Image (tube, rainbow, N blue to C red; front, top):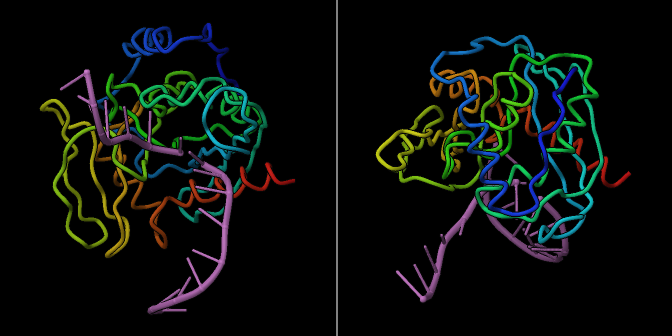
Length: 228
DNA sequence: GCGACAG
DNA sequence: ATCTTGTCGC
């Protein structure tokens, strides 16, 4: 699929924050977005060494699944290097270039992108899922494994139980239990979708495990690419 | 000022 | 993210 060329790449945290502020107005939120997507893509990255600075070898993978059967339709992997040091809040700049390369290798244009990390549940309301969504123009959501910003009450212990993730008095995401008695995930809208629809899609993608099938497939794909 | 901090 | 052994449970 076609992916827009990258904007000038920041070399300092300050420049990176400026890029986020520049792109944030391009976000389209509020509309439901894809409800029963025919194709859903999972994005994930695997690193070769520790995540300290720039230059670490990494593999970015995209796995496109049939939204109903959850069967794999297409896969794409790209190898590269970390394009920025790891800084909380600027995480996207680290793996975005390689992630976009992997998306370019796709023949299918997914109806929804599921990213590792966050969407608007972010200090400047512009996490990885927002960034990827704006640059591809596709609906995107973020599914994080640990908390980042905001406060919340522990959700009930059954699959489907959830509680709002609040930051600065606004709802930026939802803490969602995808399996009975298992640690919840943190869902937030990234681009061209809303929180309710994002959570509905996450539940549709988690029939057996805590994390979405899309994420699990992409994770395995990225690890394998780094090994082979 | 100090600690916390997606992957 | 990654480095790591065993262990409990379906």
